Image (cartoon, rainbow, N blue to C red; front, side, top):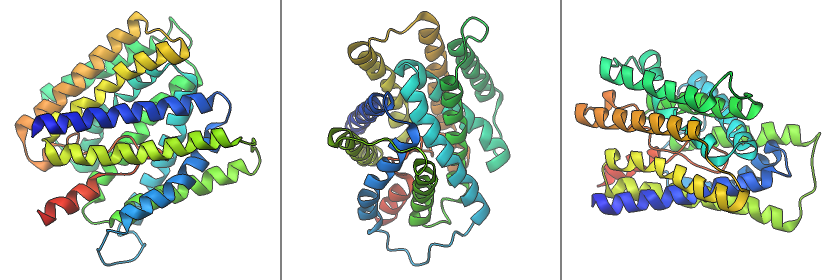
Length: 315
């Protein structure tokens, strides 16, 4: 079963990596807010079909309005940052920075969830953040808005994920999913009204691929967690760096330099260590990373955790 789950996870992250390549291709021509607007628009029908299975009673008023508002704002910033970073930075470098999310989730679990992080996990976080510095190598290379965007994606994506861990058991799935999507749609539509660039049908088709791949990747990730333990599935996300290296070289003529390889290796090793430490400790309250099962929130992705919770209650 673990092998089957790992295979589904590898397929999911291969789909996500291809999804990010399309973002980068379109990002060379269009502003991120325009891509996000249409990706969100095309994602609404797909996500709606998923939400039709939500048989919980209630309305669209959040139980925790302030936490929901903060998470929604974080999700908008995460999407905008991710789309921009993928558009302007080499793929491998973008992933290396975004891979800091498990480290940041571990840190944020202290003030938000009241978790206690032991010395070993604390050292792993510090080492991983050192890896981020190695990738950015401040002083030896120019730090651009793209680097800041990748960092923002990691920070605000982690915040959005940890808030879901805090309120997810009390909020309806429809609230957790629709509020960020609606906010992305409205915010990007407002900006788009002042700066729209006409899109030919093939580029609209590309955005359709972004939405479809974000949806398919989510379904594959659900299948992965249904067939395997979280400790097996979670490290599979790092396979995206291999796809990024391949796609970057073949499609964009990018090469991965030494500091990026070294920094990514440090970040990945730290993240994997944290995953296995959480797995060894057990207990949901001590597993903020393992319980954060969705990919970093973007306009075309959806959170899989609520659907996994519903599936477990029925089996």
